[in-house]
Image (tube, rainbow, N blue to C red; front, side, top):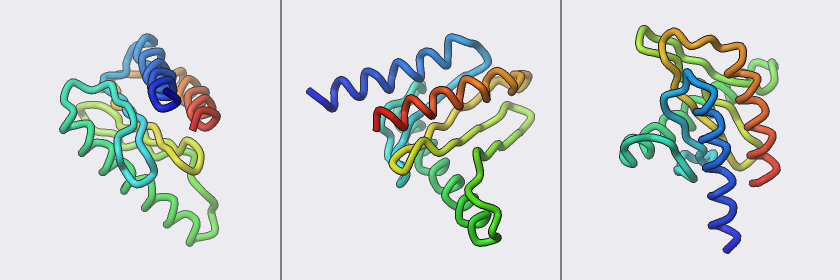
Length: 123
């Protein structure tokens, strides 16, 4: 019962993010890249998306820590087709979103930070 209610709460976080517009896909994953919940059309894409994003965020955290710069707040990858944003959500989870190419990051980053706080409390 606990797992089901946790997943419902996490899924709501992703749905609330999507409602603000500009976000095309999102996922909450464990730090080792296993999908917890996702809002993506293909489950196989969600698994790859989560695994690669966890690796990317983990590498960024290792690099900045090794350089004495602390843990990064987020990793943002920009391309002509959109942006990928990965953020740690406490010691157990991370959240990753994909945006439309012309999405403004200001409001998205503010809402993403709020989502991270909620995920950290849940997990």
